[in-house]
Image (cartoon, rainbow, N blue to C red; front, side, top):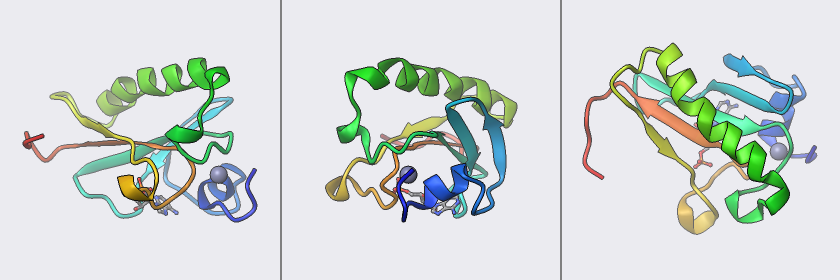
Length: 112
Ligand code: AMP
Ligand code: ZN
């Protein structure tokens, strides 16, 4: 756990979240500022600051996070597909430095 990390505090239950999934080492919850009708994120419980800070030992965990995306997306009603976004580093627009995969949908198709 990283002391001043907001997502670590969510994992620890110190800050509330609208949880949609919890496993031993993965948590998923709704984004507090959704940009679409469905917008949630999937995070490892372990504090990994960004994708650039992930290591080979995280390979299996990262794989399970990605495989969870379509399952949770479907549970949230996204039958027609969804976007996945991982912002990495300041230059990548990352604001919360605890690795997370955004899952976004319900706005219809969009370019890019
Ligand atoms: P980024 O680091 O740019 O990929 O995005 C961070 C995301 O975390 C933003 O979409 C925020 O709305 C979201 N966020 C920040 N604080 C919370 C929180 N307490 N609960 C849920 N989502 C949050
Ligand atoms: Zn953290």
